[in-house]
Amino acid sequence: MKWTDEHESIRETAAKFVDNEINPYVDQWEEDGVFPAHELFKKLGDLGMLGINKPEKYGGLGLDYSYSIVFAEEMGRVKAAGVSTGIGVQTDMATPALANFGSEELCQQYLVPAISGDAVFSIAVSEPSAGSDVASIKTFAEKKGDNYVINGSKMWITNAIQADYFCLLANTSDGPQHKNKSLIIVPSDTKGVSVSAPLKKLGLHSSDTAQIFFDNVEVPQKNRIGEEGKGFIYQMIQFQEERLYAAAAALKGYESIIQETIEYTKQRETFGKPILDNQVVHYRLAELQTEVELLRALTYNAVEEYIDGKDVLTKASMVKLKSGRLGRELTDACLQYWGGMGFMWESSVARAYRDTRLGSIGGGSDEVMLGIISKQMGILGKD
Image (cartoon, helix red, strand yellow):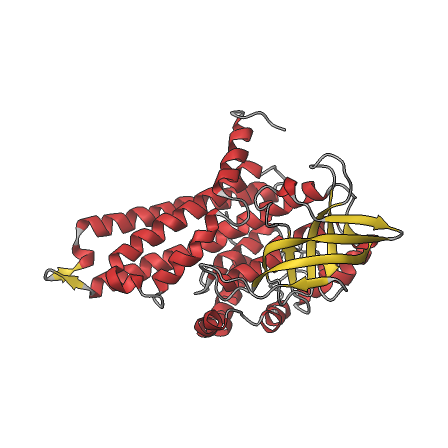
């Protein structure tokens, strides 16, 4: 990956934003169980950071995806993953399909405010009985004249409480489960939409995650993104950006934990010498830093191929798998070197330990990633 002055400008802008507008407040947001999405997204929108690779005619910067990855990488410096995840939902999880397949009218109505930061978006795919198994969702959108009538529920939805709009995946026919789904934009204030109280989670405490219920919710069929029945395909494409964002956003977070562990183990002494002076400790930290660099290289390679229009299903799945597993390994190893202080709720390594655990579950579990990779390798038959 070759970085230009424009890449560095975006990196600098994003880094300053994290330092000035996010990190000073994350402890309070974690305590509150929510960050102010409308306020924060508007500031990001004013800087052009919510539509880096979106078309200029909708307010985006019209740049290729490598510029978005620079932004994502800087979001890894946020000291609470609940905030960076909420931002990623807006940029790389709930709006890519709209930008790529939405009608001109739909993009003008919904993509423009998403890019400007005047609206908060959420992606509504997972259900209580269908998380990574997207094909098994039950929510149904039945045609009624020019409208859809939607019934069902969605679970573990990021930005749910503050969202103005949901990018909803629903069944729109009784056909084969990979060909009967559509993506539909549903305003959160539509009659029949209700949202649960915030869900209590192991980590990502500053992310307002909730369950959404749809009870005879009517929206125009023109709110459908692209062709009817292509929703599963659109969502699988959308997942690729989600997984690349997740991997890129993890990199600097992992490096930060390594660096904080180095600094802590320099100070903390046991048996007359700093913990860092033990060869097993500094070798292990060197090994973990090497693993982060390997993940960065694979992520950059996948991004380059994505920009070139290649199918990155395999590599996006690989970086998602590796990112989640490395997060678990790295935070566990570092927490151990912090000893009792690492077990304290308020320590940065403990927060990272909690937050990174979602990496192997959300956006497709490790097992789903391994299944995709196996199919692409020809080990398992492709559907």
